Length: 105
Image 1 (cartoon, one colour):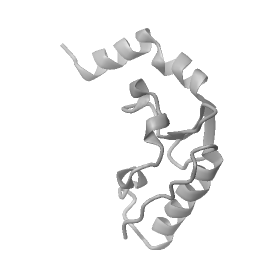
Image 2 (image 1 turned 90 degrees about the vertical axis):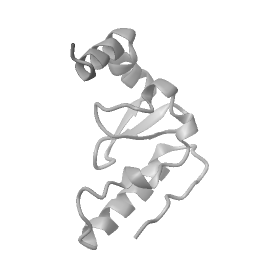
Image 3 (image 1 turned 30 degrees about the horizontal axis):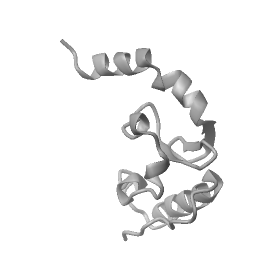
């Protein structure tokens, strides 16, 4: 069963967390395939996610709120600041390392 996430206002990632976890539980309770990733349904407010993190692959990044807080990890159960993620993964060095890893010579 496909269902879109509620749009809300994008003010607080805790609102998104409630919705993501509700859908994850609903999928689990219905016996849906574990590979039926929620991310395929689309996440609201992707425009609030900086371009350099839209293809972020270190772990699940569900969304960014207007205050710069991110809902992260597979079960949507962690919060990290955008600054912290940028510091770890958004630097030019980290981006270059990721590209080298994806594009072996």
